[in-house]
Image (cartoon, rainbow, N blue to C red; front, top):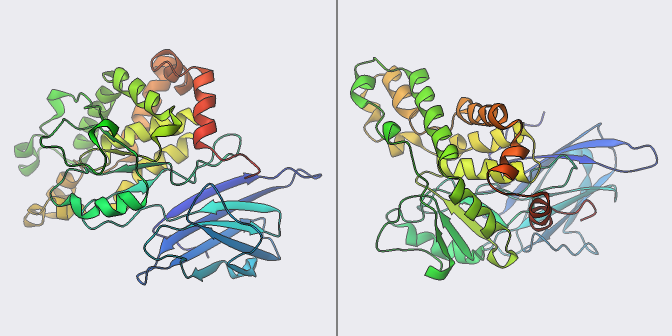
Length: 356
């Protein structure tokens, strides 16, 4: 009944009550062509009653004295007119004045920049939700014509840019140089070329490319601990937010960084994998590979596999890290020096409290 939407947000909320009732809530928000929003939800077990929806331009503050709309829970969706169409809206859904969830559009539409999305809305093991509007992941902010989107970045209040690609001159960013962190992750030189001749000859198939990508991603993790530690230092300073992390397509380097951040916040493996693979929803790979349509379907699939966000890749890296270090927690603490004290501070910054 709940159709797949463009901007999925999964929320699992544990509500303390005299009966310790647990209610699972799925909520999603997507922008409509007219600049407004469509909010959808499901509850399990099914709830009867009303849901109040509140809107705010600030994801950390909602005025709960007057909802923008109230409707029956069993309607499962509501079309909403934004307060200010040129600004991003956040929505708080309150079910029967008891259960609540915050939602927003996952991917922010841009003119040139793509795969620009929010890390808000995920839940950790204590059912605390990652804050919306704090940290974003994106394709390169230096791609040709990206200046057309700098106004949107300004509206989002971006204060810090973390760039995981090699520096390019001259810099063209939406923030002053003092707010730019260049962390060019070291890639595997043996994986920089994906043997196009072998792909075109049919010698390399999709599965071969995925294996190459697995090795390349593991190399990134194992050879950039200094940069990832620096990333967490930036995240531990409240004054740096909102932050956007970017790389070429917003898939590999930014995807790995996002996985480490979500892991540090206690988000489970399945949600980490889901966030990583979500890039495939927001990237037109044939547009990035304009000549791919001149080849047969098998070769097209293999070429596209070069830059796609494969579940097998991030799963391999996560599983290998657990095998090598015993757990992701041990890796974070032993290698990246994310002590329990630092992780608690990060959670204070990037997680809503249960009663928010």
